Length: 327
Image (cartoon, rainbow, N blue to C red; front, side, top):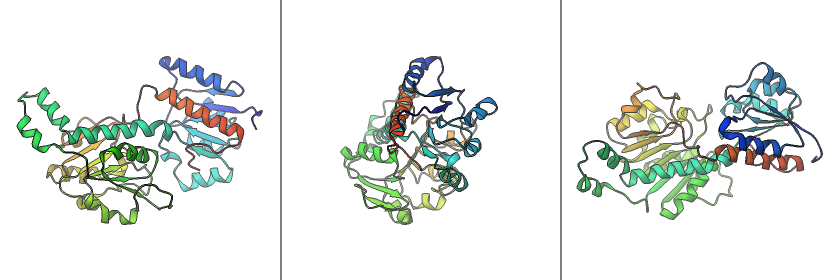
């Protein structure tokens, strides 16, 4: 297979600041035909969609319906960790029937997303938001008020929803802090090296959690997964973190819990909708800390996207198993 010349369709974003990464891609696919188009996470139209029918391989984020129609297509590598647009039974069925493989870029985003959550867990435990608020406001030197409130993570319980790349990497980062870690996934496969419970057992373990970290992707099954009933099961003073997708959390129920002070804080890197409108009540909800979907961002993001694709391309050329394969 290594001598075969493939047509690679790409709409990954290469602006003027990413000329080095574009050259890296060109050099990595020099034995193949590369078709470049402007980036769009909402699909492409016109010339780009027509060219998609010529492609053997996609690197980027194609229009889903067009991709389903492409008879020549053999492999789609998404530049994102999320694959919601493809996570529908009819799409999976259509692509699988033609043996089209789908991979994502979770290897690119697991590390930054895990570090992002870890940063907020530590920041809240050590009172950094309160201290920063005082610095920007009264400058009252609240040492006597803050010190008794600070926490150590040791022996606290962290429940992580999901068992993907982000969840696994976060578990590794948490291990030195001697937390009680509980991972939640749909089915237990038996090869997990961590404590894992089924979704059906969640109601039993949620009341134990000091921290609940949501890494779930967006799909029909996960919509409002953390609903009012499940939030009500969390212990007083618990903290919730959402690094997955905004649709997986009932934000109205969360705001109620934060306003009455039963949950001590929430950290959201994702919301519904996005961008979050300036007048949305989440912005002014007490102890709700929001970052604008930057958890997966890092300076070398584009470089790592390209490297990940090229590594998978080498595997594809050799007929080997691809990394981050969805199906």
